[in-house]
Length: 159
Image 1 (cartoon, helix red, strand yellow):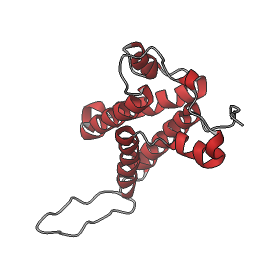
Image 2 (image 1 turned 90 degrees about the vertical axis):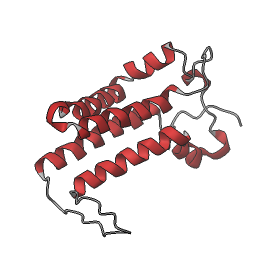
Image 3 (image 1 turned 90 degrees about the horizontal axis):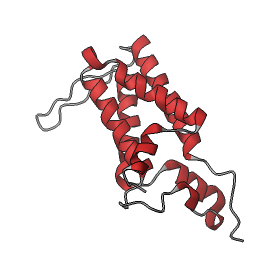
């Protein structure tokens, strides 16, 4: 009772999954841009533009990250709590005990990822490489367990 559970879904593994899935979505959208074009109905005079299925998947991906960033209900924590119940404790070694702010660095990472990917998708003529860079860096952070963005956020005082 009260023992540390070692087989939790870590933020490192989740970053790897995020990076690989983002690059997979971007690749599929690049290779198959017009597969499964989704047409939205006209609702009260508002007509949304038609989008490809992969762009819709990108929107769902970004929506999930935005939800995690706003609510701090992060998938790794939820999965670990479901698997281990009351045995799972939020590990203190992963948090910065000398933090100036109560906002978590992992939470801010998700908001910054959403911002950078949306900027890259909005201005894709000039910044087409930005979502790819974010995906590649998330994948590398998952492989090496070193995330420069989280390190920066903890350095400026986030928890």
